[in-house]
Amino acid sequence: MIEAQKLTRTFGAITAVSDLDLAVEKGEVFGFLGPNGAGKTTTIRMLAALIAPTSGSATVAGFRVGRENRSIRQNVGVLTETPGLYKRLSALDNLLFFARLYGVNSPEKQAERYLRLFELWDRRDQLAGGFSKGMRQKLALARALLHEPQVLFLDEPTAGLDPEAAKVVRDLIETLRTRERTIFLCTHNLDEAERLCDRVALFKTRLVALGRPSELKERMYGRRTVVRLLDPPAGIEEALDLPFIKRIERDDGALVISLTDPERENPILVKRLVELGAKVQSVSELDVRLEEMYLDVMEGDDAAD
Image 1 (cartoon, rainbow, N blue to C red):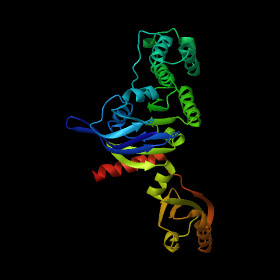
Image 2: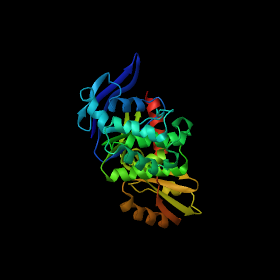
Image 3: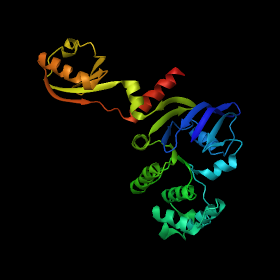
Image 4: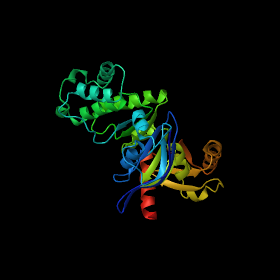
């Protein structure tokens, strides 16, 4: 659904996006994560045919960027971090204007559908300029969905929304996933990304890491078993001489033990601990949050640079 090869964009001497190779499948919720100034919005603008790449190529919904830009714009929806709305038009008139530009059948019906979905129907005659930030964000998302695009680019879609409205957006993303619509999601909310995204890309001008969150975490940290002991015997770490143990750390009174295959090795590990006189209170697998991995990867990339 989205493919990019060596996609690059420069602004004078500044490289915003460098040699991006990417493939996003139909029906995928794809997280594009990176710090401010990393080039995420520039990438979206290139893929949505809003600005031209300096070099490289890309296809979106089967259309070539730079050659079939009109078709791309007809088949994508874009929510930018600072959405542009016509402040002197009402919420309803904003949606009707864009619905007619896109050639939407029954624009009044489609506009009502999304205004009701985002609980803006009672405010339909209010000028967009009088809306709060959260309300403007919801209206802009409704605008991006009016023409039922194949690809939806969301740049910080829950920014400024209250918890209830943010949940509406997340639930909508889940619903759109079942319709096999591709969603390209930029967000600073890493818990949100971990919950919603099939795969994530960590990006900072260039691609730093790519994969399913679980795969990336396992690739970086391996699999780690947390063993809590009551009154651990002295020198227990040194006595654990099992060949499959990669590393042992202490964490708040527990042993964090890196293993290759916990399903197979945990029973052997527990048996050995008991033989050494340890009182095993609990055994679990350590779940590293995406936020922790993201910070470690970006700090490592800064060090490499």
